[in-house]
Length: 150
Ligand SMILES: [Zn+2]
Image (cartoon, rainbow, N blue to C red; front, side):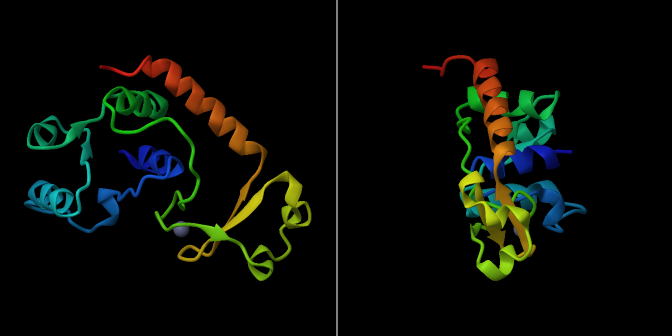
């Protein structure tokens, strides 16, 4: 349910694991998730009220921008793009080599954006004009979240 939120948190540079990818499902899943979060000093985000009560942070209903805004209000994240992680798999990205950039048309125009590479997915990322749109969405999130608390 929180797959889109996981991708957004990776856009923000957070080391984000997605429970569905961990293979912890089955009886006792909640307890295993709580232990994993404690062991790895992670914040457990959940839609489940009971799990939130046991040590997670409750993510509200709504679209992904509402959810990010709620986490900004809670002080869990800041609405600032980082784009140094693969949004699919969480691997840190690095600049693409000429070989990896291959025939990507953007490789010919480095002034229009950077090309990064995920060595796990073997996926090329182009940080071009769509980054401006993401930045706009995060500005919107910051307005939704309001001034920081305290
Ligand atoms: Zn990846």
